[in-house]
Amino acid sequence: MCSCEDEILYLDGVSEITGIPVSTLRTNHSRRPWDSPPFFKLGGAKNSPLVIRKSALWKWVKEQEEKQQQRVEELKLQRGKPDLSALLESSSRK
Image (cartoon, rainbow, N blue to C red):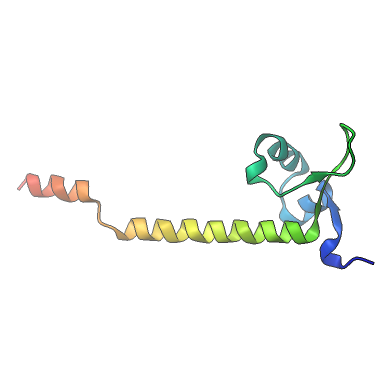
């Protein structure tokens, strides 16, 4: 018997967990696979369902959280730096 973390989730389960609509998950998988959870096809047919292991989904969610935190820190640093072009303009007017 496999652990709960190895449970296979279908798109509707992923949508329920993440709040991302199934249609968006499906579209992002085909158009932006680098920016979507690591789904795989369960079977070789064209209409085989996309699935993901629950552990892989939680890993992806954690990565998204870390990316967001990094973006916030970068924005904080940018806002903390003075705008040099504005400073130069104000000093040249004097």
